[in-house]
Amino acid sequence: MSEVHDRKLTIAKRAINFWQCEPQLSLLCGGIAGALSRTAVSPIERVKVLYQVQGTTNSYSSGTLRTVYQIWKEEGYKGLFRGNGINCIRIVPYSAVQYSVYQEMKAWLARRRQKKYNISHPEDPVEDSKLHTNTVDKLFAGTVAGFASVVATYPMDLVKTRLSIQTARSLKNLNVESPNQKGIRPLGMFGSIREIYLHEGGVRALYRGVAPTTLGVAPYAGLNFAIYENMRNAVPLEHRKNPFIILSLGGLSGGIAQTLVYPFDILRRRFQVATLQGGKMGFQYSSVWDALKTIVAKEGWRGLYKGWQANMWKIMPSMAVQWTSYDLIKKFIEER
Image (cartoon, rainbow, N blue to C red; front, top):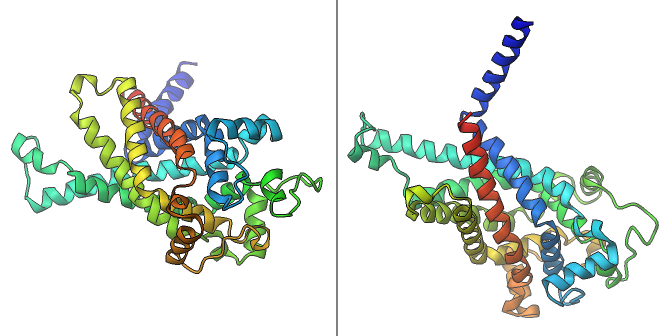
């Protein structure tokens, strides 16, 4: 019995040691933090997507909280979380890739600095300061991390958007019967991916809208990481592990970063639903530039910020939860 117990203990210690090392640590913590944060704000995420893709129909225009109530009234509580299952399946690898790539990029940049300045004693305060990543490094590392996470998970993001807008009201305005009206159960994640692949253009269709998505997500990730870490470094050392401080900084960094790149999020959603229901959504753009011009011409400059308020309701608490979860889980694992 003692040998079996010792063997199990050894295996457990090896597992802990494995997950305490990078990039595994950031993969694990980032994935868990992403799932927790997205589930917490799933109803707001759905409202934001509906605002973004409704064009000029304005089926949902009574404010974020009223729209949440409207969805609950029309579709029940499950409607508030439609698309959240696939969102969690997507966000776990998305966040895991983003956090781990970010940490690896920072480590790579530090090694480059060490080689560039020929630093042989990094414990020396003067030489150690040269190894610290600056704001430009953080922006670059975060941008690369954002790009990697988009490429790794984009087909699931495409399907999640489509599942989010499958409502009786949104399709009724297009004179299209929703799956529920036909008595047909809406397609799930894998069914939707298969449908898009077979009937809308194969792999290329699964990556429709990836260009504006990358243009939005990559700089957003860079800004988010850089803003959060710079604000966190400005906080006195003894307060940096305070959950309330982390919550506040996470929410602020996410809100500022998202506001700066929000028009690209609009483009991302519009391209993702362009071919839905045979193109009846009305979003037919030949390029990113054409989409920008068309939206401004038809909907005004405000069209580029449709759903922004709902997005702030989502992104600030989401990033607050995500950064807090990430830091606390990482600290917990490191101290085992």
